[in-house]
Length: 145
Image (cartoon, rainbow, N blue to C red; front, side):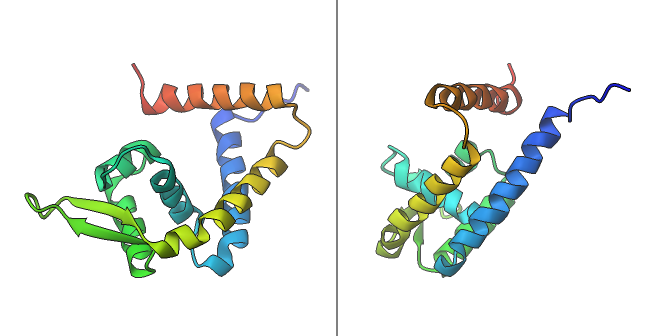
């Protein structure tokens, strides 16, 4: 009997589940989760001078309620400041705090180590090809057209 391969989406979801669990474990003593890490990573590396919640939603492909909760917890923990827009109080600008910069190096080192473990056994060329193909997969679903 021929065994068929696992559906691509389920395989990607499984990889994400394991990655997220491991990253959460590594970040535990910083007090942030993998989801909060993803938002901080976006804020650290965006070229935008002013970032809104909508920017975070678009760039991380997350829904408004999810981002609202993540930002609220990051604000409560002192990693970001959410400042209401002077013209429209519903809109907030997001700023990183010194506390966020204090954990940036550690957070990024943990994520890079986990990325290396994830791609162990792959050449640099294979890793780049994988990254390109994963970007295509993401764009196929997030940006169909």
